[in-house]
Image (cartoon, rainbow, N blue to C red; front, top):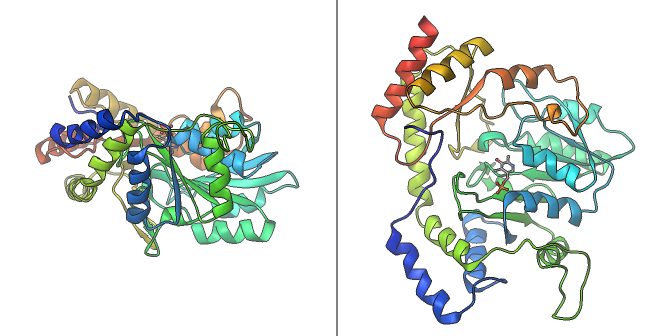
Length: 359
Ligand SMILES: *Cc1c(COP(=O)(O)O)cnc(C)c1O
């Protein structure tokens, strides 16, 4: 079976090394020493000032929205994982969807500007597949209209924009360290900000609003993560360069063997150093796409339609006129990509896709 992804598992003894310390300290969660160590190492690796390790990438978006006091309308992309939209709705705001750029598949800044109303409080954009949005254009629009910006950087671990971590940008950038992501802590997420005040606020929110044992700074939630998850992160971080390098080689091999596949690949921003988080192709028609899925599945290969459907088709939001997104959602496939995927397996995937195309 060839799934779309497989979680990375480090050598078991590397993880077990951390367990003795956890047993000795009898400190399992609540901002323990391994959580602190992971936060420090992640800040070093990503070269960012402030980062909090959280339960998951969804609570990260929710805490960001809450900490920025967002209300009313948030302009967002319909081409992302459901958590990007559901977090907006969960926080009592209204997602306003604008279409994506047909080349990058990221939110189109021109359409963002056209959608701004008196009720708009922020832009929530996703760096789709780890490919940075047009950050310069979005920041300029946000500054001009005094809007906050949150980047859902769940796919963008290790991506650089103009030589800096993508997490540097926006009021808050959020991360997911879920098992299926490039870097993972089994379950986990993070918020990154340049603002010390915002960091403090989000740190309170992560821990029920506690300011000492008997005092509460403000409304909070439980966004804490455990020593066990932090330990997995510490081990996995030591493998991240090898993981990324393997995916680069695999992606380039896909490029080679799929040379004759009629498809569009997302245009990586020229300012970016890409992280090879996903290998996506947009095929000529939905019919071809579905035929390919069927034939791949018959051979126990499971690509995923990331993303399908367009998020404005969720039952709890208002639909929008989004011709590009609609068309891309119908035709996009993410192909299997994970550290142990072999060239033979990639050959097999490619052969089937080319056979379907040529039939
Ligand atoms: C995975 C993902 C999330 C949610 O992260 P979790 O850690 O699974 O909660 C949010 N946005 C995007 C784009 C994602 O891919």
